[in-house]
Image (cartoon, rainbow, N blue to C red):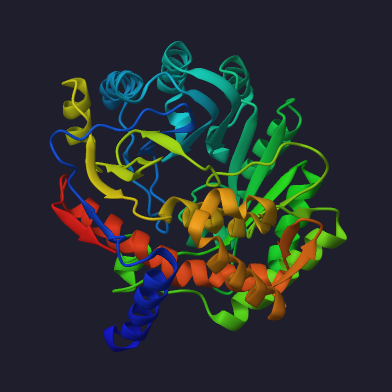
Length: 431
C-alpha cells in the first residue's frame, strides 16, 4: 500500500483510538526514565525468547541471530541474570504459565533447562510450560528432555506438508521430517500438541490447506493453529518485495482459505478457540499470545505490566552486556493511561472469540458502556452471537477481526520493531 493509500487508515486509527481510550493515552514508546522500576506484580506469566536459528525463515519477523555454539553460555548467563533482575524488581510473583519461543528453542535446550530451574527458584510456578519446536530438531532425546523440564504443551512449526510450500518458506527438509516429528510428539504423553499450518501461500489452494489440516489431524495434533503469510518490510521476503508497509495476501484468496479451514475444522470435531486456532476434545488450549500479563526474558522480549508495555533491546550483545552488569535491558516503554489496560484485555477476548459480558465492568470501569456499544454493533452486523453470558464471534466476525488485526495491529508491530531493529536503544517510537 502506498503512502497516499495509508493515510486514511492512519486517520481512522487515530480517531478510533482517541474515542475508545481517550486523549490522555499517548501511543509512543520512549526510553523509560532512569529511576523507573516495574510495579510489584502478584500474578503474571513469563515469556522466554530464544533468538537462535540455524536457518532463517524469510517470513519470520522475530528477533533472531544465526546459531553458534559459542553464544549459548553468554546467552544463558544473561537470561539467568534477567530472571534475577525481574524477581528483585517486581517481586516473586505467581506464574500462571511459561511460554518459550524463538527463534528455535530446541537449539538451546541446555539453556532453557537452566533458566527454568532458576525461574522455579525465584518465582512460584502454578501453570503450564509451553514451548515451540522445529520439526528438524524433534527426536526421542528432545522429547525426553522436554518431559524432564516439565513441559506440558508443545507446538510444532509444521507450516505445510507440501515440498513446494516448504521451499517457499525456506524450510530445507522434506515433508516426512515434519510428519515424523508430529507423530512422535503426539504419541509422547504431552497434555496437548499444536501444529502450526500456514495458508494464503503463493499458488496454494484451499484444498492444499485442508489437506495439510487432515494430515496434521491424522498424525495426532490436538490443536491446529492457522495463519497467513506475513511479509514485514524488515524480513527477507519484505526486502525482496521492496515493501514499505505490511503487504497482505489477496483478500479473496485469504477469505476462501479461511472459510475452507473453518468448515473443515467444524466437520472434523475441532472447535474454534481463537481467531486462528481450533482444538478438539478437552485437552488444554495452546496459545502463544492470550495472556493478561507477562514478563519477557531475552533480546527483543516484551513485557505486559499492570502499568504499561516495555520492550527489551533487540540487539543480542547489548542485551547480554546490560543484564550481566545487573541493569535492566528495557529499551522502550509505553505507559497506560485511563482504561487502556481494560481495552487491551477486551482486545484479547476478541482474539479468543469469546467475550465474557459479566467481566466488562471490572475490566473497563467507566469505559464499559463504550465496549457494550461496540459489542451490540458487532452483534447487529452478524459478527457475534449471544451464548449465555458470553458473546461468541461468528466465522464472519473471526475472519474480519483477523483482517483488521493484520492491517492495524501488525502495522503497529512493524513500526515499533523496524526501529528497534535499527538501533539498540531508540529514543522514541510513535505507533
